[in-house]
Length: 141
Image 1 (cartoon, rainbow, N blue to C red):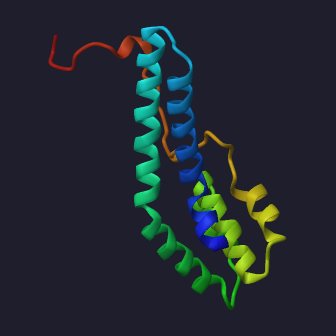
Image 2 (cartoon, rainbow, N blue to C red; image 1 turned 180 degrees about the horizontal axis):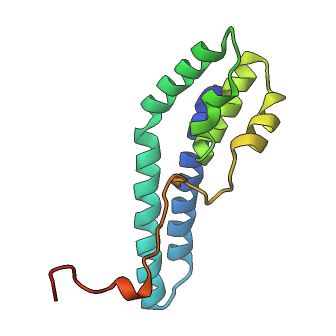
């Protein structure tokens, strides 16, 4: 049961947020613009919740793989890819609890967590600025 709650926590939070938004919309009679913005927000929340609920199978498979990889030999690097998303961090915590290594979460979090809004950033991207006088066409003009 703990695994089910850990893997679905953020989907449940979005479900509750959508429900509260609907209830508040019914209780409070707002300006039509506020209702429109609230409606768009509600659609966004529902789409994200459906995405999270539909990915539960992938998260269970990833959890099983993490458990198998770390059952006999513990490897911090195997958890790195899951630390960028809140639901991934919950899965890492659940796997560590299952392995009896709950205390290692602080170490992994300190090593791989880059912030709540970090997301999937490509750190290998290099931007090369061009000099200001190099804007001419190379067609002989």
